[in-house]
Image (cartoon, rainbow, N blue to C red):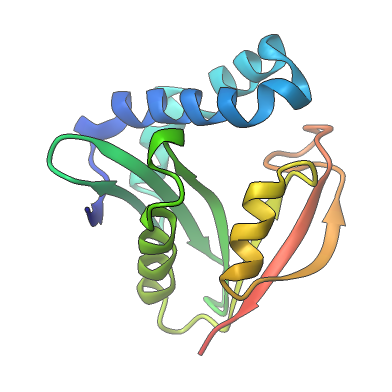
Length: 163
């Protein structure tokens, strides 16, 4: 498995990966219909395509030449000292095989001036919380609107000091 920059030709596969991982993770929390709504909005091709050209960001995939097993997207703040990890998802059948760690390592390397990596995670997503804690993140707060203004989805905020 290797990590590379995502391209426009990957977007359909990434969209499917996000739908698969969201349903596997969140159907029991939000229900299938709500997960369908969220993925249609947040993971549309237009939304994904916009990430490819966002300044001060990295959009990565974990690829073995046959399968894109995971993806990550992060963007630096205005002063480049804080990076927000917006997405890190691994297909369920590839979880616990080091794919998430590969993506996280690459994100950290992509922002050499950053001093903090921050993310939001659904508090019921115990697997993700365990992954981030095992990789040096600490609970730093909470938000009522994970992922988008007025999403109404509460989340925990985790941070990891870099450099």
